[in-house]
Length: 111
Image (cartoon, rainbow, N blue to C red; front, top):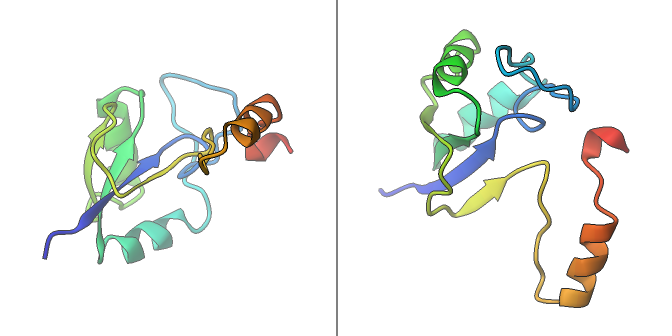
């Protein structure tokens, strides 16, 4: 069976990032992230999508026991079934709504 790929952003989705970025340290894993990745990996190829240093990310993945479930780390937007990100807007075909959503966008942890 070929699994569909889900790209998961790291900061603000899988970890407890609050907007304070430190390039040498990745915040702790977010509650529920391990269970979600473990469960989804049964049916999907899990790829972490981040611009962070891949060695630091790989260490974080191992420390959080996700290495069994995450198939790759990339900074390239690979072909994927879904992208899960805290800084994105779902385009529904309506440019007027899109413009409004862009103007009013706020990251979930700043609400």
